[in-house]
Length: 223
Ligand code: ADP
Ligand code: ZN
Image 1 (cartoon, rainbow, N blue to C red):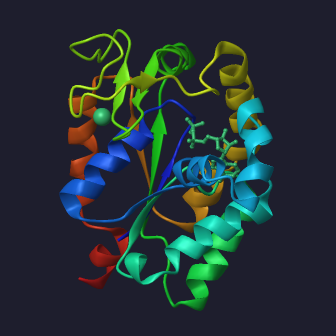
Image 2 (cartoon, rainbow, N blue to C red; image 1 turned 90 degrees about the vertical axis):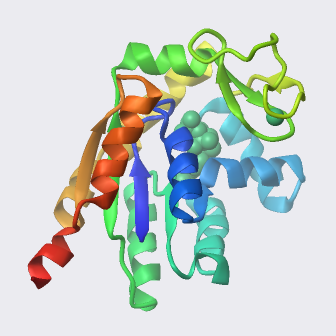
């Protein structure tokens, strides 16, 4: 299964991707996580990407494409992947299609996640992440038992540098300006399932699993 998770920042696609990835044994490829690893490791790409990420802007295509295409063409992804945060503009989507085309593959399904903007802003502004295991929490919606300490591994939690009100509104603006047009692109070129994420995590889970296990259009046509 080659899946794309599309939707605004803060809609919860990372949390959901992680979950499906574990349950269905499909690699979760998050462009944001890959970029942050490069920033942390101070690689050449990371050093260039840092300022864009901190401003809430898209990292230039040539840097992101290198990382993501590099990853999905490895042995690790040969049976499929969940792409989370990529593509984020039309040219990335086209590069992705071309890359898969050359391998004789294609995107099987696109999950398009939606939520109202006030919910998104609250989710991002209250998000806390574990420094060592990466588990996600929310100050009020999903608080850890002990303030700023991870329930799973006991390490300290932190807030992402781009999860501040000013950068959040910039990320949402960039999403509307550059990423939103991918919805039409995938409506025309792939199979797109819309998942409304205004509810709680377990409700959203159920909707995704239902979609995930529903027959794909190709399978129906083959019968
Ligand atoms: P979110 O979806 O919550 O904004 P991500 O972790 O997906 O968070 O991305 C964080 C930042 O990383 C983005 O604001 C952007 O700067 C950069 N980034 C991630 N994916 C891409 C991409 N496909 N193209 C360009 N920049 C990206
Ligand atoms: Zn932890």
